[in-house]
Amino acid sequence: MTEGQKRKAVTAMDEMSKDGKFQRTESQYRAWVKADGSTDFPAEKDRYVIYYSWACPWACRTLAVRALLGLQDVIETIAVEPIMARTKPDDPEDQHIGWWFSDKRPDTINGCKHIRELYEKVDPQGKTTKFTVPVLFDKKQNKIVSNESSEIIRMLKEFNEFADKSAPFAGVDLYPEDLKKEIDAVNEWVYPMYNNGVYRSGFATSQEAYNEAVKEVWEALDRAEKILSEQRYLAGDRFTEADVRFFVTSVRFDEIYASHFKCTRRISESCPHVFEHLKEILQMPGVRDTVDIDDARTHYTCSHKKINPFSIIPISPFQAFSDKDFPECWYEVHMKPHNRDEKFPVKK
Image (cartoon, rainbow, N blue to C red; front, side):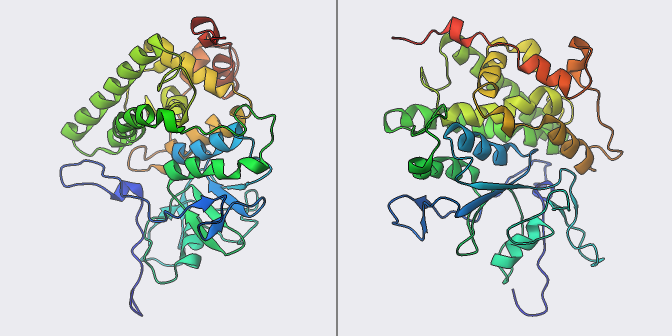
């Protein structure tokens, strides 16, 4: 960026093709933390922080793995506010909307007011124009390590020596060598059809683009339903990253994606095995603490003005099954005992 030029900031909703299809761009920070010190980012306790949004499934998959591996006291986290706001409110030519911090949710590490400000602090030349979470940040070097969630969840195993050994998967590699082929095969369809598929459906600006996307979402749900009717987890008999990656979309589906992103079906009504799989993971120690469904619903309905210009928040479908208000009604349904232990007993 030359002197006098302004950085053109964009959001995901700007990544649209001429035929109305959402086309997500790749993450730009792709470094790795390594326990053996072979990279610029060695694994150390209290050195790193994850910036995240409770709404973002990509960010919350890193929180889920952090909890499952017992790393809550090893890697700090900082949350943004749910409703996006202007990141350059004093510049009438810059209408960018993005994640921000508040007195209630401050950036206690860098003192930034917006996630955009964090990116611009480490990238003053203006290479970065999309300011996403999660961000894995190195407090010692003041650098962004990674903003690619699929890689962050894999590098978290590098911190295993510092883990709380009482955690359900402490010391476990959720991307084990002997299951990589199976996990990769699942991820190959889950990402485009389901994780990103709900966004392709919700952000579509043509009927054809929407039809194509939502049908793939349904196909992904049907595919997962069949797999989970025959085995406990998506890649086999063992819990892996494939289940986490699927879970973060499923846990938001009925409350948010079914209506806000026009995916229309409800997992709790049409996919019983997927729903029980969702409940099992949500009920694993530490995982519920990585889900704030109220914050998530608030973000989607109040931040996407092109989709929901009046910020009207739909009544939760789970209030039909409970005399409790939201979000208590949602948790009441999702925290009921799952049947996965009974259907697929652990082999001794």
